[in-house]
Length: 467
Image (cartoon, rainbow, N blue to C red; front, side):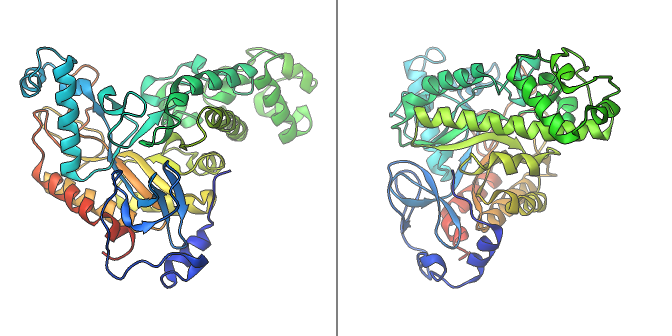
């Protein structure tokens, strides 16, 4: 089970003198040390295991590099190679990469070298989960930059609009087998790769009734309750309702049904429409059974991953920081993950409140796995993220969040969204776009470049409270 630290201990460790608590290390009065090949700070050394991990040093949480150095994951998402090969910028990048065609040998080499140069120029140290550029992360053992790897036993990412079939019976042996197959396929080849930061599952999977309405999907409770009697998920649902109600008459009152006993509910197929709860009692029932489903989902998925790859961090799903069930869901998922991996598009104060609210429930470090502040333009009228009035304000909000968050003893990184602009003419981006640190032509926004580079330079100064 991953290590957890209570909030009171985090607060205590942040307030007492250097090195006094739990025999922790003494941080130099003045920051010293360089960076290892993973981007870790050589001024603070832990045991080297050959892989990324987490550690609490008595004062704060850290990620730790394979070489044993303190690490804050300051990264970027959406390194999708095809975003450099759109109708509006393909010819430009073909010329720059001296390639004849997209994805030929020259293009792949040019893209890889340009990407590594840009990442080093900015001082970033991680490729987030939204990276589809095999020339940066493959083959196993050949990556030249730390990255988050995918592990998706179920395809539940919100942007894929998961349909009912995606919500598999997580209590069934078939789900265990699916996790085993997925882990062997995607994780086993990387078990000895030191560049893998950890594994992430789905992107903000819709889980609650409110999310199902917003995303046009369903939920595990609404699906499994309608299965046949021999389905393990249906059996788990009936057991949960029996525990909640005792006598079936109370259940009947909530649902307007006339079951004479619990076995009647067990045998009833498709007895309830797959729609939003009709009353608060049904909503509460769904929320309670959902937590059982999430716990089963995580326990089985993590166990399969550990059998295929016992070396790397398990980040779980990138949880929607705005979901109505965040507190209760994170309290369950954190029993199985190595950190709390969220996506939260909010200014610093909003993110601070969320982390403060979750700290007691999770006792783990936080990673913001995807978020951004953006500025609408003519070609990007509706970019994801809170909209600033100009590029200077966008840079200010970026600095405000990263400096304040990194100063927390329970924060270990942010993966920004993203590197390169998209445009409304790009297929799939007509309604909403992704804004990067550079234009579609590879020109960095000066305000954003200066801010990111400054944070990179002072990353460990901020993390050790010496800013």
